[in-house]
Image 1 (tube, one colour):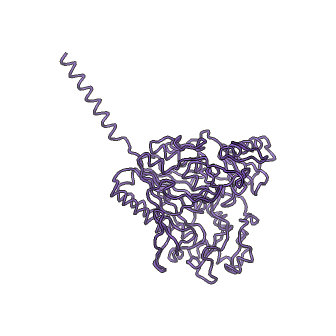
Image 2: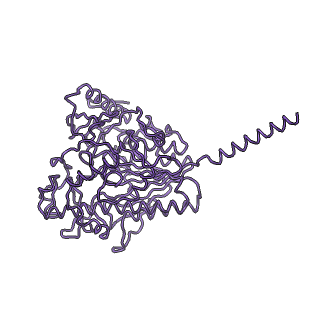
Image 3: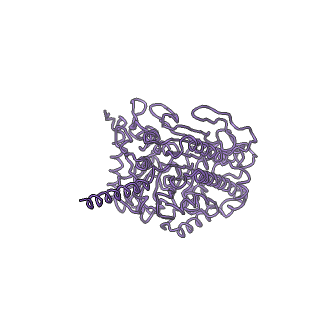
Length: 548
């Protein structure tokens, strides 16, 4: 009997030690960092195909992590940012308009009643923001949400469109002094300065408690402004032109292992309708400016030199952002957070064809890229930056909505330098982060279920599974992706196009006439989603029928 008792005691002790060991090795909740670029082309990072443009830190994150090949945003700045923080389509939270809702006469209501940072706080996270904001409701009247409304503990907010000479800056909702002229202020550096500041405060006050940090760059959004020493690195290197850059990036992507497909020809007739006219571009910006994506060799030599300088500034902005990302990653290592921090990097939309002159306005004759200049990338270089995809920001063709998405997590992701091909969207980020935090995606409360899925399974393995179709609608341009099939319209309320993305992500071969049944099926799915959103926000359909 005594021996049996000893054996039983030893068994219990062994079990207890095993359980203790298991508990001690259970990963803690990961820290979460989400980094967002502004108006960056799909192939601007080296790990997605860039030729000259240097992004060693983003490339290192990808080399030791994952690259999503079919990740989407909403095609515009504020809808993407609002979807990211809410977990809903922007139309559901009244950040973007949807056809069929009479916003002026109906008291429409947002679908959501929670925000991602607030829910993460419920799971023990401290939450920090640094950079661009642009989270607001547009209807029934414009209402900008505060950092505390969304659920951030601390926030450093920059001013959109002023990379070198800000007029206003805010911290925790209060305006703070701006740097003196000539101080060397650069927005990407300032954004990471404050991100690291919050990281240090967290380490000092909270220790190893988990945190969520949202780093929202304003680079490389127009105006093209950068430190001259950054521009000098690229000066003259883009005289080869956008046609050659598109070819080089297409070749690079094939070598990197991306799927190869036809690339659509330049479309000179496609540009933002609110752009300056050709005459205004010449009179307000520079006599060598052009607002059309025409073949490079059709430009004059002065035009080529001016355009090459513009791309040099764009590249300088992306490289500076990359350098600051590297500085932030070094801070994570220094403070012991690196191994159990999951880092996401993507862009809010594709590169932009917009060409405007606003804010501080352009000073004719000013040094390109300086705080006195207001230059935009334009459709030629936007087409190159979005290689191998078609069109630009504000369109819902692939060039407007497809984004690079890198995920890095030393403790949680075993694969290195791996692709993930599952179609995914920014609506999937909130449920993914909630699951990482030990929460439930159902905590994204509202009068409808959040439309996204958790991407956690795809961090472990590359597979494609069934998911609800991904819905797009912006500026009355429409799209829907269901598996490898996509429908889209090129103009406001235009004709539907149909593409098989497994063979044609360049959207070169419109199959609408060849496969009318598939087109009809997908249009019905898009219309059903639109009607469901209208019902959720309490709007009316195009026939005037009201919903409760």
